[in-house]
Amino acid sequence: MVSRAMPQSAPLPPGSIAGVRSIIGFPGSPLHGCPRLCEGKVDVWIAPLRALGNSLYSMRTLLSPEESKRASRYRFDVDHRQFVVGRVILRSLLAMYLNMDASQISFCYGSFGKPRLAPDLQAANLEFNLSHSEDMLILAVAGGRSVGVDLEHVRRAPDVMCALDSFLTAAEIRAMRLNPTAEKSRQCLRAWIRKEALVKADGRGLHFSLDQLETIHLLPALSSACSYAHSALVPQSWRLWDLALPGGYLGTVVAADDGSDLHIRVQAIGHSVGIGLDFTTGPNDSPDR
Image: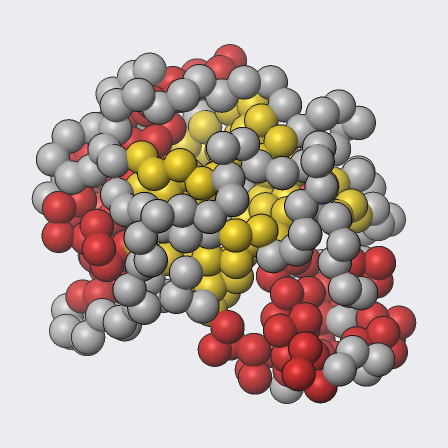
């Protein structure tokens, strides 16, 4: 396995911003005091992988043989360790909701590769989705509704700008050209993140072309705490929240919208992490404090 330097993330600011509680559970022991997932809630967990890596890597015995085999395929040590730490976090958090040993959790995969709890655990009616970019991980957990998440660092914006035709519809490209130059790269990256989170929630991933997924109404300046999407390609209504994370990361959380009240609860593992909604929050859509 080749050694490669772990990317350096910006220092995590002390304190917290709107709607964040700091959960100190790692290292050394499983998380304690994780709140029950209530109806109408989507729990979102944020974890800085590098900061947690040394302590959580020692818990790699929680992984299944298949996960350990996947981890061994990574060429670079940093990628191997990030995968292991990510799976430890996933298993530890799901174990709290399921009230079971983290090592005993098993998974199955949909036709397009989306992970779910194995059939013997699906009575818990728990859905989840995971994403990571460089040093940051994001996990969404919801009861009885599909969820999707995506996360990217802002340094990816120039790459995304060079590939507009591959993921924006013609109408979206026209709308994007109306944006001020200073906002264009961030909005393009945001559009990419939203679409990836949306198709992950749908369960088909990137098995259809993003440039056919019309979400033009998501592109103008954001003015409410969450946005909505509906498309013939993903024939269901969805609710979307944009997050601005420390260190230059942007994330989007997507959950199936059934018309009921739905609130997002954002929590950080191991640090007091400053996380903000990437828009002005409304009175009914702000995350729980």
